[in-house]
Image 1: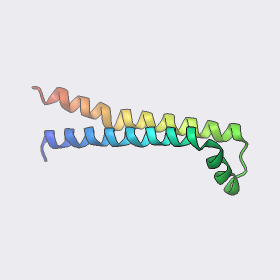
Image 2: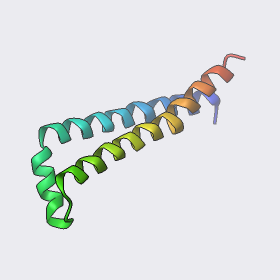
Image 3: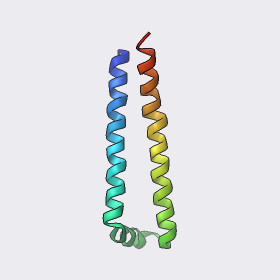
Length: 82
């Protein structure tokens, strides 16, 4: 496996993960009440706590994309030049 293949794989992983994050955000903005009611059938959560969980989860996912995809991609980009 070459450095270029790993770097390209990390780039595509980052792009796909950012797309998932964007889709998550858009669906939550458009269908917030429906998603809250759906989850409300399974869990007894106040709406504020539901929003907090969603916001924190999106932040964790974004941080994970940065640490696990983008930073290694940049490191391989730098190392590949030498």
